[in-house]
Length: 145
Image 1: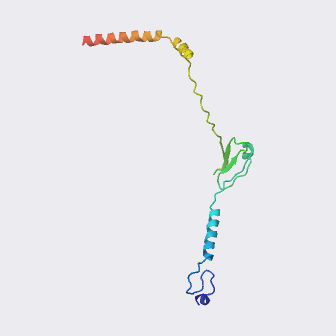
Image 2: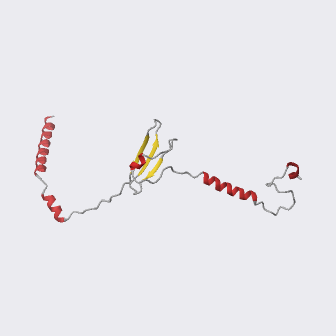
Image 3: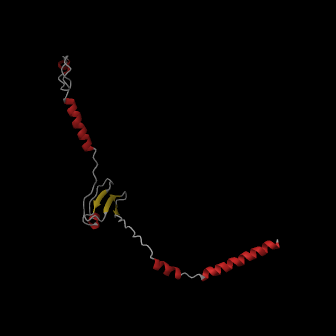
């Protein structure tokens, strides 16, 4: 009766006392709208795979100032290109850094003996003599007070 007065609405079931039937139609529409919103919220990066940096310099980019990404095919770098407010384009090159692990090298007993023999101890003896002279002068100054 309600549906007849205002026209037919497929989302409002006819009035009856039997509530055991679940409503399937609105649930399906809710699922499809959730899938559509997930697809529309997906972010996409501008750009494409290129062979060299020179190719990037000639590529067209969006005029809205968003960054375009151009990975080089051999994996040597990722190049970004962006339109600046003055009308020029800004190109930045990102190159990977390879971690080079240093090889720990231990000294051999022969190398240690050779390096100890090469130390000139005469400079240390000169320093000892200078320290003794300074100490004696400090003692003289203290006795004079």
